Length: 150
Image (cartoon, rainbow, N blue to C red; front, side, top):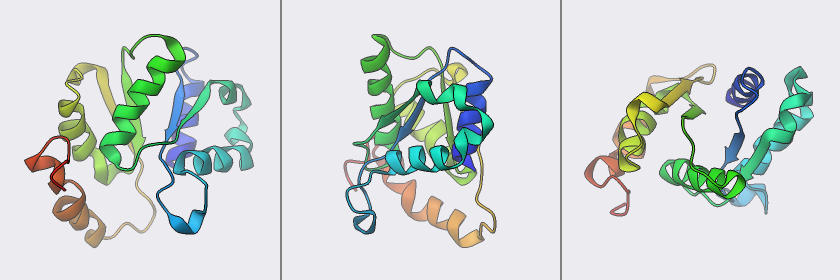
């Protein structure tokens, strides 16, 4: 669903780019990055009836965690456009809102008023997932904004 939402948002703003972000983080996927798997999913769905977005979709295939997803996407945007983004919209699972909006955005010193988060949670989200987000995924970034102590 978050892939669909990202494509939908880009269709509403012709000046935007979509950066699918994520490296080769799962051995079972073989040499396929998370970013490429998102592209393939969008392609398989016919770009959700919005094929005009496809030329503005690019991949960032090096990120290994959520901070790198954001940081490397900013760098990739600069690589593609020759400038840094004026605004950033992150589309991810809603339970990751605090991690992106408060921790990662602040680590990059990106202005709060130019940063937007759109949360799309998977169906059947359990309390254990949200507790795991707080206890494990966000925790390394609370004590060190760059997660290097993890």
